Each structure stands twice: as structure tokens, then as C-alpha cells.
Length: 321
Image (cartoon, rainbow, N blue to C red):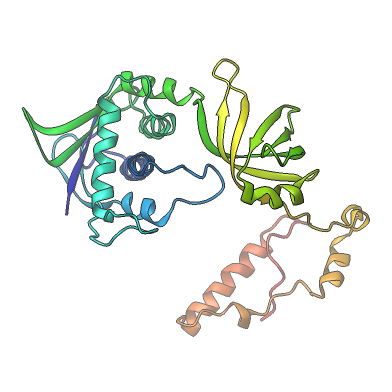
């Protein structure tokens, strides 16, 4: 088991005074940052807003709370320690991926490289913001308890200056980004394997695709679709210019009867339409392990609350016993 420490420093950053919510923010913020670092370690594209992390990323970024130490609040956490190979036949164990991702996170925090990954920077900036670094808390230091470097254990400190630097980097639009653009495909060139995508904003993006995706392009022409792939941006205007297609996400239009949607119905009409009386049978609300006395007390409390409602206002359905 590889232990890491997260040392929060500030006026109230000590056991007994530190906010429980801040402890949770440390763990959740670190998990998000480690997940972003794991993508960099694997050299794999992120799916943007189209899906969850892969199984390998989720497993490698999951932390376990071990305990805390005295002084400024120090959360003792454990990285994933599974020796199983990660999913999709990657030749690396979950434990190794977790350790490498945490080390990559420390690298990015301590580096002044302006080329720091923008999404990883955003994860660090968000964690610092949620913890009030530079405001109600002074800093948070991440410590690798297993590392041996000159001068002691390896550590990376996030203070107000680092928070500001990470925020600036996170706001920078990358030259390329793995994501999904939504628009209407048109003017496909099946000899040059290109097409055009008109975005909702009116902009046009050139789509390049592999020959084996030509049939899907043909089917998606002149209809709205999601184009998933590597998007290249103009560094001056930050506008998407081209996308290397990986997959097409087709939208499914649900049937909607406009007349029925706009038809006003009062409460009685809704009851009739849904074939319900609005009354609740207490037997349907029964909890198996309640005693008879507890059940009667529960129903009495509901009845009292209902009777206390202002005239013409009903917070609960009518209950009959």
C-alpha cells in the first residue's frame, strides 16, 4: 500500500477544528486530479463530456482514507494497490498507474512549464478554490511518503500563487482537444475523405475521416450529429477549425405531440388521465422492521403536519387509516 499525505495549513487546519467538508474536498479533489494525470500517463484521449472515465482510470484514481495526524491537518491516504492489469489490455497494473499518475501530478504542480495540461491544471485549480487556498486556508501540500529524494520526501505545495497559475493555464484553450462537436454534416468529399460540419454558432469545421467511416458519413449527411474526435483549434481565435473523426454520435429525435404538450389540464384531469385517486394506502408505505407503535406514531405525525397546513394548501396526499 502506497501512502500519500495531504497537509492542509491555515488558522483552522488542525484535527478538531478543520471542517469535515474540507476533508471530503481534499479526497474528491485529489481523485479528480489523479484521474486527469492518469490520462497523461497513458497518453490516451479523454472523452470530454461524452462518458465516464474508463475502468482503469477510475480504479487508479480511487483513494482510501487511512487516518489523520496531529498538527496542521494531515490526511493520510492510500493510493490504489491492486496488482491486476488495467482494462483494455494495457500492460500496466492499476497500482502502477495510480503511483505514476500521482507522481505526474506532483511534477505538474512543481513545474513552471507553461505547457502544463489545461485539464489537469483545471482539476488542481478547482480543488484549491474549493479549499479556499489563499483565503481561509493558506496552502495544501501533497507528500509522497514512499519517495526518496535529496532533502527528504517528495512534496508539492499548492498555495495562492500556484492556484492562480493553474487557473490561468486552465483558461487557455489547447491547440488540440479530444471532444465532441455537434452540428450538421454537408459537402462530403469521398475521394479526399473530408466533409464540412456546420456548428450551431454558424461556424464551419473541416472533418477528416478514414475510408472505413465513409458509409457513416453518408448516412449522417444533412442531419444533426455529434462528431467525436481530435479537434484542432486556431490558437489566435480559439475557434475549432478541423476535427479528425473517430466516431459519429447520432441523435435520436423523440416523438412529441405539440397539441398534447400545450393542452392545459387541471389536477382532477391529470388524476383521471393517469388513473389515480391521489390517495395513499398506508400499507403501501409500510417499512418491514417498524413496530406497530412506531408505525402509528409515524402516521400520527403525518396527519398532524397535514392538518397544520394553511387553508387551501396541501403538502401531502390525503391519508386514510
